[in-house]
Length: 223
Ligand code: HEC
Ligand code: HEC
Ligand code: HEC
Ligand code: HEC
Image (cartoon, rainbow, N blue to C red; front, side, top):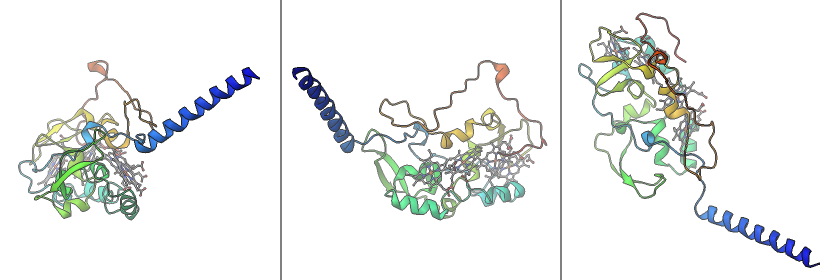
């Protein structure tokens, strides 16, 4: 009988512990996903490269009409206008964090992120953005999100003759780096509940493993 009581007490303690843990978790919910540092804020790309008038995709369309048409049919071009996304955004309380992947450029967003009120960075301090561009916003994941780095349009080719600064970028040809920023959500915090899909770690061990630039005009398939 004494043994039984002891076991019952242990069970009761475990149950209490579980209830307390769940209670604490109700107050401070587990992170279902954690957004990496590079997407905690919008991308600070605000000026087009030399020789180009604006950041808008239509500007690129003048000289890259086929790529523009292909992009226009993609979900990237609809990442903001997609009605399912718009409903989900309202449902999730219009969180700022959603914007950093669906409309990642600073001037696609109506507000500037000045800082955060919480360590998880889900609660930003916002201010009206005077340079907000509603046309650019409609474009969702637009060309310059993937292509503009430090004033140059980066791509798979070396030594191209372009009317704008252009340079080869290994990330553009390794098949995952450019995409994983938004498509692979990972978190190393101890209290991250799920990591779906698990963080993808692929190391480039030697110079030999690094992707080589393509020779234009190669026929390559955009994934
Ligand atoms: C880390 C980047 C990132 C963040 C943050 C993010 N999304 Fe997304 N979202 C994506 C990607 C990438 C996809 C496409 C996934 C796929 O289909 O493989 C997507 C797809 C979606 C879809 C599906 C659209 C469709 O038509 O299939 C909805 C809806 C959506 N997101 C809503 C949201 C909402 C609401 C938030 C904020 C709570 C949010 N997203 C935050 C990257 C993100
Ligand atoms: C006035 C014409 C013109 C405009 C506007 C223009 N480009 Fe280009 N771009 C070119 C030419 C020409 C090349 C050379 C290679 C080729 O013909 O594709 C090029 C090359 C590129 C490359 C390949 C770079 C490399 O080294 O691999 C990328 C990426 C690119 N442009 C992106 C863009 C984007 C994004 C925009 C819009 C912001 C844009 N371009 C606007 C004419 C233009
Ligand atoms: C700036 C963030 C971002 C980057 C970078 C990005 N994506 Fe996306 N992608 C999204 C979002 C957001 C969606 C969902 C749009 C929607 O449905 O509302 C999406 C949707 C897609 C879809 C459609 C999925 C579906 O279920 O319909 C494919 C395919 C895709 N992306 C492939 C890629 C590839 C390949 C790359 C790299 C070359 C890439 N993405 C880079 C944000 C991004
Ligand atoms: C989600 C990221 C992403 C977006 C958005 C995107 N690109 Fe690209 N682009 C890439 C990647 C990755 C490559 C290199 C691999 C390939 O060509 O498939 C590339 C290749 C290119 C090239 C060089 C290859 C070629 O075929 O000439 C040009 C030029 C280019 N993109 C222009 C654009 C323009 C213009 C837009 C918008 C209308 C755009 N891209 C939107 C990721 C993107």
